[in-house]
Amino acid sequence: MSKTQYRLNVVTHLKQPQKIILLKRTLKSFFPKFTGIVAILKNIMRSMDCTGLVADKFYILLTSRDTKCNKLRLPKQFCLKHIDKLQDSMELKLRNGYILPVQFDAVKCELKGVMWFFKELELEGGEILLFEYFGRFKFMVYIIGRCGSEITYPEKVHCLQRCSTKIVTLGDGGWRFIFFRSAGSGIFDDVDAPPAFSNCCGFALPTRITYVLRNGKKFFGTYKSKKCRFSGLNSMFEILGSDIVLDLRGIVFTYNGTREVSISAFDSHCNEIVYPGTPICMDSNGSFPVIGTYFQIILELKHVLDDCFVVDISKDFKELFEEWDNFQVINVYSESKCWRLVIRKRDDYHCATLEDGWQQLRADLGLIVGNTCVFESAIQCYDQFKIRVLDPEERSYRFFWLNVSRIIPYRRLMCIS
Image: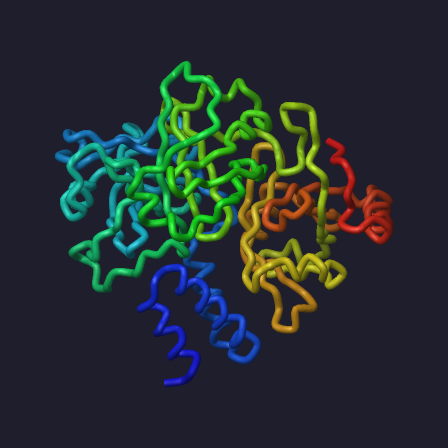
């Protein structure tokens, strides 16, 4: 057994924080030397079902009656929005590798054939099924128990699957809990996490955390371990506006094992609320985030071909590359749309390539040869970007930003919207 294989095998026998640290050290030390690691990481990113789109979410609160039926009704608004993408044959996929084929009835907005799902996972009612849909034939499903925290998934797959279960960890997809609020409730600043969530994630949560909203906005908060309490949420209302409390009924908090906690808000119909704006647009209080850094891609003929999946990012933005992981997932925003892209930092770290999501972004924005795509982010934020598309005649604008970036480090300028 090689040294690399040994270190990766040892990871499975360690506690979660030790796993993250050792795996990170292993990849950093061996990535430049072993091309096999590149293939492994690429497969990991592909396994995320990254189609270029950020997932649409909704949840279903199961009743005891639901778990005794072979069909499950989906929110009507979600079905109408994705009616042209949803397939007759779909799959429900869990984090542990469990996959169940189901049928979708577009007329009744129902999934049929779900009885196996309820029986094999021993669901009795009171649980919450959180659905993520990336636009393909598959739903990613997270199960939140009656305690309000994501469950510990059983080591089982569907009876017709010929594979073993996968290890579910905090570092692979994060961990979730849901917080409900009644209609008419006012602005709040604190949320107490369920004990089950704190038992799972409390050891890894830092005191100072960063919240990430659905539109890419970030703000700081704290986690008080003794009280299992998240604080600082009043900043969310300052950013989005106090009117959002009128529609807000549930919030799903997702901790990914770092310093960030993602916030997904849901309305009374159990659909995710997609707040307008971008990471660098004006907040409801009239202030603008400071622009930190950017990169750009000038479209050539090769970029609009059907077989163009990989796009080079100029080494002129090497300073930004240093802030990225070897495989970096970024979210790109334009008004109410959002795309998820995967960027790979090359072995010599002198260039980077956009590896996944380009074709979806290109199609949705109608990009043509000569367009310049400028990706801008707020200061000290390297994974949430707003995109500006400049026509060929706007090249003077592009050269202006290039000249400014040479004078002002990180372009600490106020956003112009």
